[in-house]
Length: 79
Image: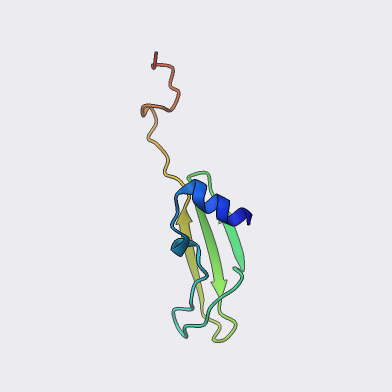
């Protein structure tokens, strides 16, 4: 249930959050081997297929960082 509300808040289409298929054999993978979040708003998932052993990485962007000094960042120049 919480995943759905996160998907709605970030504006990601639900298709972007589906489980990946192995690019080699087509099997659906259920759980990532590892996941890592970085402060730029990206999540990387490392996958390994149980059927054929192929390993690959996927990533999604939750938000895009504004360049420093962009309007709305709170630089103190706004009035």
